Image 1 (tube, rainbow, N blue to C red):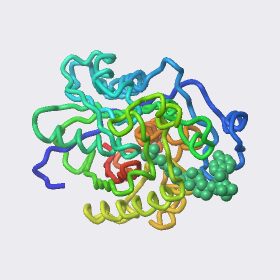
Image 2 (image 1 turned 120 degrees about the vertical axis):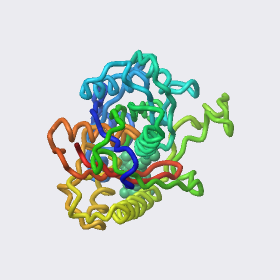
Image 3 (image 1 turned 90 degrees about the vertical axis):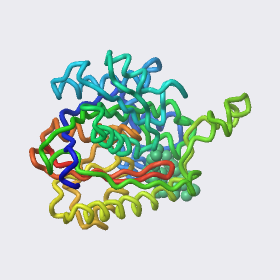
Length: 332
Ligand code: ACO
């Protein structure tokens, strides 16, 4: 990045996962599947499912609280709340406004970002850009998803993959160059929007008896096409961001990929010639938590000391839109 821009420090991370664990074996009691199929095709063993009355903003609040605690900040210190989600509490108002209220943040400007599973990286770049604009000092950037609310529990091709959770980081405008959030490389292409989408509930197919009867309010996915796109997109984004920052793969200490499928990550590892032990993986325990997956993994990696001071971290995402991208962080 150019040296005249203020640096963006990561002041703290936090996460939250609901208590209820849903195992592959339990799923195989209500759809025709097995632990062996799910684990061998995706790497997932279990996922968390939010309580019926537990919302995306409830989970965002808990992750945000943990990140603020890790950063030793009080409510008055937060100027911005950005929530990345595809499972907002309601179509409007934004989940960020609801989260701001639940956290009691008196002066935070709050809004949502929707870029599906890439949402957290889009929110991080937005937060950093707004801090650099000069009007704000600290941003709480959260990915939170109640995927169970848009999962078709009768569709074995999708219901085995997703889970609920939230993760958060506090960004702060700083002065120490070369550390913190170093930049992002983001992309979108609406041409293939139908390979990963939820058809109903918007202006195209508003809720109606027919839309409910035909199951339009659930996530739909062409798994194989998404798989191929994911590997291609994350590989290219990684190559591009390393080039932009004059880095080689050898200088990357830890990769936090979107936690969708272990086979996608394994292919990425071989294509980028980066060993698997550089990838932080927790999808076996949480499944794909969409916009929450990267901040949840980041927080676990930090708290388990997998990430150490001065580590160079590469985050990689892909998702509906289509959207994809990468971000670089030099850990403080
Ligand atoms: N249990 C048992 N059999 C199943 C299941 C299941 N849960 N799901 C599908 N099958 C069957 C299919 O019906 C098919 O049977 P057939 O050959 O008789 O037709 C067979 O298994 C193979 O199905 P495929 O879809 O070809 O299986 P594949 O090996 O591609 O794995 C998977 C499917 C895991 C979904 C894979 O394609 C994948 O991971 N894709 C990427 C998904 C992803 O990353 N999504 C991220 C979404 S991000 C966001 O923005 C929300």
